[in-house]
Amino acid sequence: MSPDSIPCGSVRSAAEVNELIRALWLRTGGRLTAQEREEYELLVVEWAEAVRCEVIEAA
Image (cartoon, rainbow, N blue to C red; front, side, top):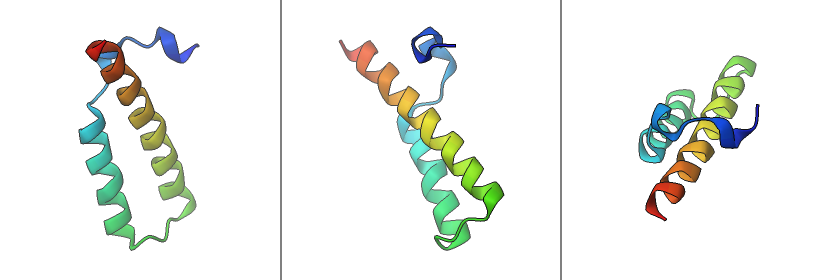
């Protein structure tokens, strides 16, 4: 599935996802287990999608 096919209304805001990423780093002290690394990677992808949607909506 192309990232462009994900409806923008179905994602959290970039700010909200950023807070989750920050909380993950704080909770782990900056040292991620394999499971936490997977969570981090998913959050980064979600953050990038949220930023894309916010740019599209602002245009």
